[in-house]
Amino acid sequence: MSVPIESFFLPLEREGTLQQRVKRQVVEGILSGRFAHGARLPSTRALARHLGVSRITIAFAYTDLVADDYLVSRGRSGYYVSSAAPQTSAPQTQPHHEGDLDWSRLIRRSPPHPTRIDRPTDWQRYPYPFLYGQPDPALFEHANWRQCALQALGQREFDALTADHYERDDPELVDYLLRHILPRRGIAAGPENVLLTLGSQNALWLTAQLLLSPRRTAVLENPGYTGLRDILEHTGCRVATVDVDAEGLAPIAIPEEAHVVFVTASHHCPTGVAMPMARRKALLDRATELGCVLVEDDYEFELAMPGAAAPALKAMDRSGCVVYAGSFSKTLFPGLRLGYLVAPEPFVRHARALRGTVLRHPPGVVQRTVARFLALGHYDTQIKRMRAAYQARKAELHEALSSYGLAPASATPTAGTSVWMRAPPGVDTGTLANALRAQGVVIEAGAPFFSPDTPDTAHYRLAISSIPEARIRSGVGLIAEEISAMSGA
Image 1 (cartoon, rainbow, N blue to C red):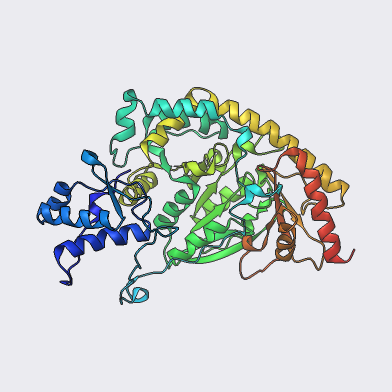
Image 2: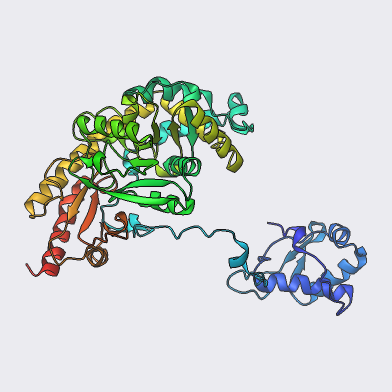
């Protein structure tokens, strides 16, 4: 290991001779831990050229450091940090000077503080993680993904890997979406109707930026997706919330001043309620009547259970009022950060231009790797494996809930990989979640999903994507015991 020559510079102060100032640079580097024992220092010739001093100055400085046991000389090999040199236990960084600028005055608009569901970052160490959206490594096609990634990194794919494609997306991935993914939702579209995004969050952000302003009104489901509320707050638009019932968002409750309505029709977030066909038609009719846009977040359709998923709102759209957002986060893995928008060409054109000003396009190597993974059939194999595992886990969860006397909030079977729960009267689910952590159980308190105008501490969510089937019953038992203790039952 060598000490980078860029680590050396001569301070502006004039204290001491050049030789002393060079020595001080080396000693400070060693004492701070930045120059490790055994590290090779730059040659006298190279360091002299770098600092703009004579070679003899560096040679004398190194000789003095050898005498003080900070350095050792190894013949023609050079100078190295001595193993006997004093050194701190960990590298120390120089203090960072913030300066005197008033950033609160200079920043034009402070983004909202994100509404976060309280999840431990080290959730993997908990034996009972009923945590939504996190992947199970046992269900992932590691070997096939690695093969596709190597292909994407190969010389034949050099252009897809390295080029700046400006606003364009990978044609192979777009083609697969058009021919295989979207038809499963009943959606017919062309390349001009598709835009790839950095996940659904980025898709929703682009949509909000294009469609909303302080003079326009957005409609949200209540409860609903927490990240969307943060996005809308930054646009400054007016926000109206509509309570969700057993069939999802009620079209009649959408206010007449609505410009954009955000909806999770196939499996509502977070309750899992699937909107029936009659209500979907009524929702489309209401949007046409008001002249507003419906933004359909179809975040988990491949894993929607039970039964076959109904067609997407976009598939039933005859007036061109639906902007459809999809994602690979739940079916591949969240860290992939890849999603897509499907919408009329004028909207996609403007969204592509906006995306181009921020990030050009999602990384080419990611797009090509996913395209390969889909085209070779690995994606369908993984979906089949995940659906089978999740169906078994969800069945186990419902059986365990029934055994311990815990009932879901809805008596009707819900879609998706989670179950929306309601605690008994007097049980605060935020307090419940904190108490369960000490027993190795992670649940999600429901309060963040609700509008601040309608606070709720009675609901919580149990998900099955990241917990092994064999641990579900024991975890539910611990939840039941804690609820019983808190409710005095």
